[in-house]
Length: 164
Image (cartoon, rainbow, N blue to C red; front, top):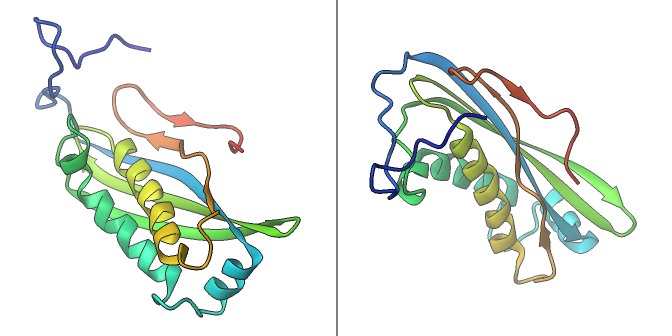
């Protein structure tokens, strides 16, 4: 772990100057989840929610949020994104279903896209909650975490196991 560089000489927060860092291809993948009732699972998978196609809307919301990360996380840089991909899978345990969310982000630039991937995964889960809350407010958004990042001077990172 390197030293913190987000403080100025007065000890106050600052946006780091990344202008001297080389442009490299950088990627990040973040995961999140939301656990829902069997009724919500059935409605989502059969496209029967009154607000529309839940996964399609959540996917678009994730991409939109990813592109605006710099506007909501104070010290993030505006980054030209080359690609954002959000994918889903389901797990069943007892009478509950968990929607697993994966957000992958790619850029060619001088700073990483970890925050963009984490924002995309988070907003995706929040959007599913919003679209389904009229049916059941008992949904639980799970842990959100970085699974992988590549590029940059600090090198690559890969989480070896999924967080539950």
